[in-house]
Structures are given as C-alpha cells and as structure tokens.
Length: 178
Image (cartoon, rainbow, N blue to C red; front, top):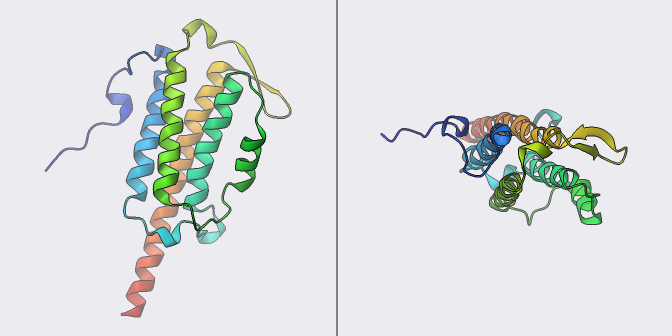
C-alpha cells in the first residue's frame, strides 16, 4: 500500500518563496490538494445543494478562488475590477454549466499565480501597508497574504463537512430506495 505524502508544511521549503511566506504557500498548496481530494468522486448533481441551510460545495470552491484573487489584488495595491465584483456577486449562485473539475482547476490556477507572486517578493516588503476592501481597512502585505491562505484552509474544512454531509444524505436516500 502506497503511503500518502506528508502535508505540504512537512515537505520542506518551496524554492524561491521567502521564508516568512512559506507557511502561507504551504497552506495554499494544501488547500489545493484537499479541494481535489475531498471532491474526488463527488456526485456532480449535489454541487449546489445546501445541507442544513449551509453553503454549497460549489460556493466554497468559488469563494476560495475569489478570495485569493481579491487578496492578490489588494496585495498588489490594486482596486477590484468590475469582473471581480461580478464574480463575488455570483459566488454560490447555482450554475448547471459549472463543474467540480472546472472549479478545482480555477482554484489550482489561482494558487499557482499566488505562489509565483510570493516568489517575486522580498522579505523587506512584507510589512508594507496595504488597504483592504471598499472601506480601505488597514493591513500589511504579509497580513493580506496570510489571510488568503488561512481563509482558504477554513473553507476547505467547511467543504469537507459539506461533502461528508451530502454523501451521507445521498447514501441514506439510496438505501431507502432499496
């Protein structure tokens, strides 16, 4: 039996990423891995279901991608674009044309973009001030990047619970038909 590789934070440094950003990079890569793992063989028809009035699997996958995209904009001192506002508005809106694979690949791409951005940073930049959101709330570059990483981990945990709940309900429903 093949042994699973350790979590990303136990795999060593990511070449080119400043030491202070290693934990954020590891968290994003772990989130990417787990997004694929938890949705593997997940019933596509359950993508937009909201068990117990909680967010859907589709929402969580859209949201972690969107938050990462928005945090990268703030990190680069950019305002959000109209496209980003539209995507934010559509997070969690059921769309039969969107697949789990597409949502996971979108997050995958955004994580790779974030890691590439991390590699361009020098550790002396990390405490520079950043403004977040329409209210331009104060943060730092490292604060924005860590928020993106921890936020993705939080939603991956919620995604796991939602997937487990839906699989359990789906299994119960199929058993009741027998």
